[in-house]
Length: 110
Image (tube, rainbow, N blue to C red; front, side, top):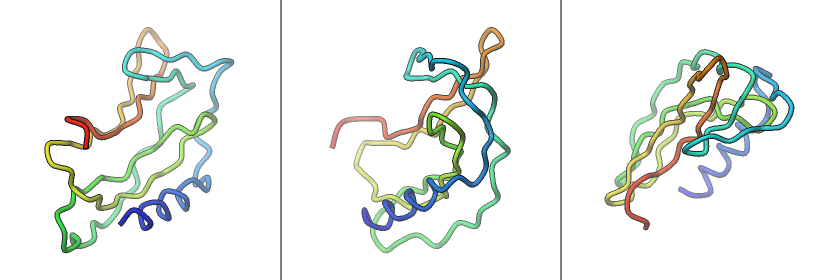
């Protein structure tokens, strides 16, 4: 499963849409949020494939900030880790500035 995920992420890193360019130096806010010049594009529509035979969590597709632009990461199944939950990326605006906070697994370490 790890190799499949790596292949999906690598393929997704090919720029699908140049959406935003960072302004000057990146500022990082609370929770690792990064200042960006605008919001991500609208989410892409995807069909969820059937789950794999082992326990897994569906990670819905999302726009990831690469440091220069947003890149679409396709939805995929990931091996479930007991007690851990996927937290999707967050996009917000504060005092006229857009921020992107990467998603990730939260909960007790593996």
